[in-house]
Image 1: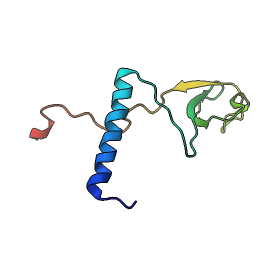
Image 2: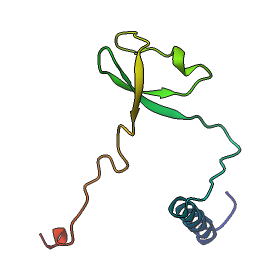
Image 3: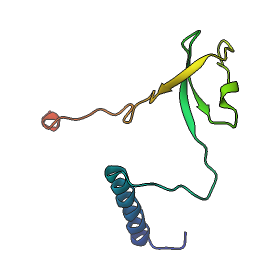
Image 4: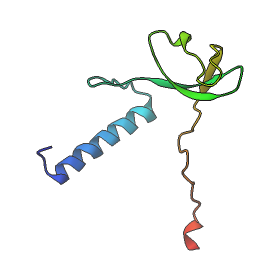
Length: 95
């Protein structure tokens, strides 16, 4: 990248602080530049299969990859914020 390691980590730390501040205080976050897409987890009403659907122009035309039904509902945050991470208690380090 053409910058020193300490400078890179100062920039990264500043970005983390700004992002956390925006999330905690409810500030707007503007995403611009680059290529990105929005996706959501959806659940089929017929077979119960849950999958991640990339948001297209006509997301209502999407179908279940298992049974090809077009009847589905948003599944919410299917995987959770800390999926796969164990929350440690204050005394777990004494073992």
